Image (cartoon, rainbow, N blue to C red; front, side):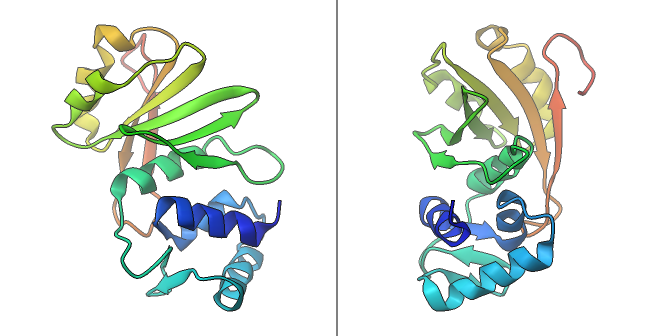
Length: 179
C-alpha cells in the first residue's frame, strides 16, 4: 500500500490526527523515515499541518477525542508487516478494522456517556473494544449483562496530552485485574 495514500485516506476519514499517531499507524521502524514521508505530503496532498503536531483534512476540522483514542487503541493491533486498514463506522463506534480475518469495532465512551452502549447494534461476527476515557468507569461497564460474553474487550484510555500517546490498559471481563 502506498504510504502517502494511506496517510491521506486516514486524515480524510478521521479529520485531525496527531502526527505521532500517524507515524505509529504506518508502522515504520525508523520514525525519521516516517517523519520525512509525512513532510513530503506537504507538496503532494491537501493535508494541512497544525503546529507541526497534528495533521488535518482541512482547516475546519476539529480534534475528536473519540477518534484519537480509537486510533491509538488500533495501534495495539498492528500486523507485523505493513499498516492496518482502518475505517470510520457508525456511531457510537468510531473505528473498525479487520485483523486475522476477524472484524473489530472500537467504541470510545466519555464520562457520563455509558448510555450510548444501549444503541449499539451488536453483531455476532464482530469483536468490540469498548474504551472508556475515565478508568473509574471500567467497573460499571464490566458488569453490564449485555457485555458479558467473549465478543467484548474492555479498555481504559488516559491522555496526558492530545499529541502524545495515551496510557491504554486492557481489562479481562472475568477478573478484576488488568491484562
